[in-house]
Length: 240
Image (cartoon, rainbow, N blue to C red):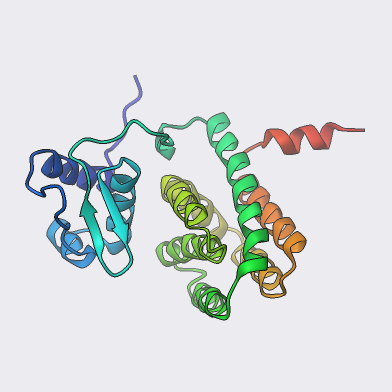
């Protein structure tokens, strides 16, 4: 039977879930702030973001801008959840990338139609920061995820943002693995950044078709960098 190390995210998630179930954080109460939780558990802010997203996806808390995390239930819901990346085989991970391509390309197309000046400023700033941090593995992973979530946010459909944020967090280790591989190949980080810029430019220009195409291309390349074979792509390549 395969065993693996329990991640920091899982450790903190289990502890907070237990505290909620035991009534330490009653229904209707707020969890400590992200900074306070990070200090309490000795982890990064990125880990706490993952933890709160897991708790939200389980129906234990709800998150609101400017309010934080409020406890909504002492027992988790049995709703749709993705398996965590370390538990996935290559076929399952490829299937998730197929799903991610469909969802994120549609989100980018919608963002191209609905984006505001504020959205574009946010995406532009993320790209600038990402360009500076291309060779910092952890910063690059966090900013990469933030860029994709920023595209989803620009749809102004909260369900796109919530779903894609959840998927990005679940596949965080896969993104980290792809970034680590990218760093070992000369000029590849710059090539990946060019893919992000193409998405941004299409969204900025209001070109929904180009935004969809640029996102599809980027995520297909990301899957390829992980050594994954996407079924839809393989089927298309086999056509005469």
